[in-house]
Length: 435
Ligand SMILES: *Cc1c(COP(=O)(O)O)cnc(C)c1O
Image (cartoon, rainbow, N blue to C red; front, side, top):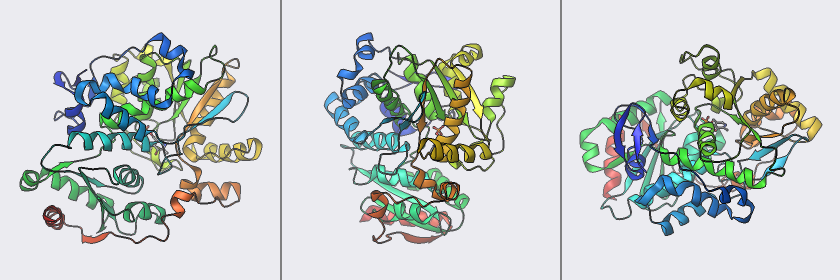
């Protein structure tokens, strides 16, 4: 299997190169040259398989011979060592809970897989790889947890002082070991500028192997297919195929689902559930893609005005908008409806969704009203406690902190403070090498 660039079909790199590089120099995205076809047996007898077997079968063709089977099996089982339950919510709607991992959100899956692939690729190198990230909150936590104690990899995370939530700060700063947090006296933009300048610094790149843990990396994107198969394994009535609603921001998650579907996963229909950031719903209406200004909403992980993975969706459908429309219906759900949905689900079904899951539920419920013989599930992408400030006032109750967060409360903040200056970061990175 090789990957080309969405800007250049002639480019030809394997999984290892695509993972280490992250993005082609031409600013396109890496895309698999073939879509693997899964055997009928695999789909029809999926109940007989373990989660590990399923994930291995799905990812193997994409990895090719860049990681031997024994090592890939280890990576896969470490990636998915938590539950992915499909929970009934109403007669026709279930919730695929993707928040049972270490940072309580679905991004754990992609981040854990990527960290272990990088570790494998650098096991015989004469230097470690350094992952450098700027975060305004959540991404940093998922990356820190995913890379913690992973060998051959150092992680340096920059965050703006006083501008991340206290839970997020705990997630970034208390791990220690190979995770170093830098508290920057400046804004998120300052952090990003310092990171960008480091990637462009010739001397630094001669001494260190720097990479970003970007969300468009194929090693973060492709393993997101796993849980769509885990849902199929748990799907009760296999004669009525599921309608799947995906809360969408950058469109990586739904694109992984669509890819799984092209490989043979049985799906009735997909719903791309967006908040007020409606660049994709607009595209479906006008067939002209226009990036938009990002607007802030309650489901802030989906506040994306120009979704970078949407180009992969188009590529998957060979840019044929008619066939895309047959498989996918987009929705844009506003904050008022999101709040109402959280209230309604909690009071009537005793189910508490987070704001992202609520957007997807609202869209799915609407679609099913026009297709009453069908059933579906939505992806519950985060634990509601991560958005307690939104959820608690709506339900008028406090949500208990999960044990993963409680464990961090007494731990020491190990971050270092730094001025908003790329030269200071450079000195810090170079000094870290000599230790
Ligand atoms: C990142 C994120 C999303 C959006 O996923 P994309 O792959 O960017 O579409 C949805 N919900 C939560 C909780 C997220 O963190």
